[in-house]
Image (cartoon, rainbow, N blue to C red):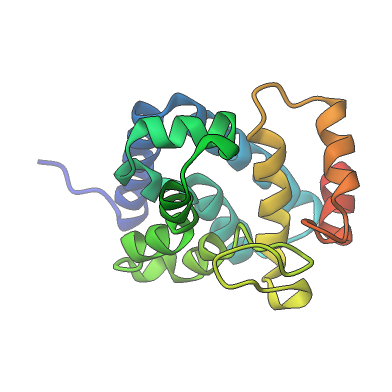
Amino acid sequence: MTVTPESERFDFGMEVFSRMLSAYHPNLGNTALRAVACCKMLGEALGLTANQRQNLLWAAALHDISLVRIDRSIVNRWLRDPGKNTKEEIILIKGHPEQSQRMLQFCPVLKEACELIVTHHEHWDGTGYPAGLKMEMIPWLSRLLAVVIYYYGKPSPDPQTVKEIKAQVDKMFDPKAVEAFVQ
């Protein structure tokens, strides 16, 4: 047995989580992979510290990890047309940021990433979940992540998706986060 450095073992674990998410639901896995790539570019372009970049990447990769505990048909409906989910199913889905945080909090190195994960569905105007945080109460990196996830969560992100995002400035999204993403 070959002993690997701690960082290599951690990267291996992250890869396992990513593959698990992709195996459960390819769309979720693809969204996470594309979000990681975009967050990598954003982190560099914005001059984030190495620690901020790493936490943003981990959060992008793992933000939906707890959805694997929910029946795939419920997740499919939510991704296609959330209006077709029952109230109980929506409660399950809306609990995923906190569930993801709970799943990952055992790992001290993910503490800051977990703070981003639990707030990735908060909205600039306070209408998001799970805590109804608004504006600067939402961590800056979560605000960036929310825009990235929205964009790459679409089956075929395109200029129309950017228009949708811009239309949600001051509602779902922080204007500065949208500006950073668009540039």
